[in-house]
Length: 448
Image 1 (spheres, rainbow, N blue to C red):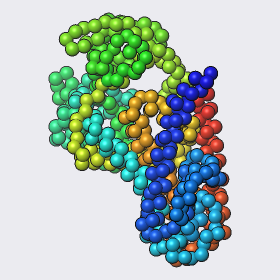
Image 2: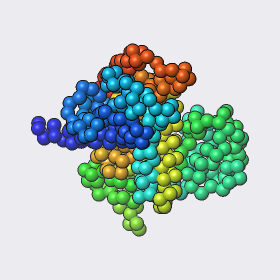
Image 3: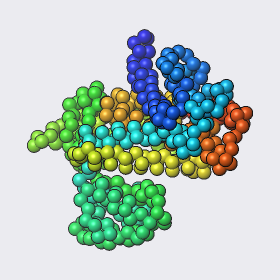
């Protein structure tokens, strides 16, 4: 019993404590450093929301841990914030409200900027240390039914030769070519059974959504990447680099064909024919049962053997790696902003899309179990999400503070202290209600 409890804490609670601790610390450090830069007195640096639990005072700043571990704040002298303290408004030069508009904007925005910088730094480092994933093929392995690619007549095993006159050699080049030509007519030359044909695509508008709706993926060979410890594949002796060429004596042409067979046979032994170097091996693997949901949200049981797809990497020097880290962070931010917009407009279910602390803890635990690299990437992507959420114009968030500051700048006079307190109280109540909702939603989703 105690062993199970310890393993749960180790696998799920400890990773999320580390992840949130890093993200909150970096975010609040941004506010802290910007405030110090412009001579604003920092009265409190808190991990968590009030009430205060414990801490230490060094100089003029109280460094502490507070009771609600779902955020944090920096208490600036002369500012109405999450602490709901209005007793320090004296108009002194070291107070936040005494500073010029541009300095206040920088101080409020610094947390979001630091979260984005952290994401770029982590992703850039991962590109530098691991390299950039490369898919050395332009052959199509999947066409989504009803997608733009399907309407164009693209088929599995078609090879994309060039786009708008540019020859293509990797799938990354295919994706980049589509990105470069968003919003304009695109000429695509494909090769099918040795014959070349020309297709023309007219985009509805210049939007990343068009690229999402394209509905096409490359042909990945069924080559093994990582083998998870104590998985069916690991116990059977499958190794990194092995190529699966047949299952139950039926030829396997690509990764998706292999996964479809495995998914359809939970707990049923399958005979795998594997190519390892020049040797052909055979092994029997029974996929374990995994509960998941299909595209319509229905609970289903699938088989998994515990392997990831093999990925080739191209080494990058430091500066190009940081550029790729920046591009990756921006792209992930765009995807999240678009997803949030779809929730607001009712095109996506809030219940299905929003993830709260319980779901994040589960994802952090899974990322930690998959290794240091996956956990670092999880921190980077979550840092981008935290930056986006914090800049929303909601009272008690950075975006809410920023909106008030900009309103005061336009009005050329401050909003009353009483009004700010009311706004902050409303914001805190809203955030607490949202937190309770997403926690309940997480538990309900996991229980199903």
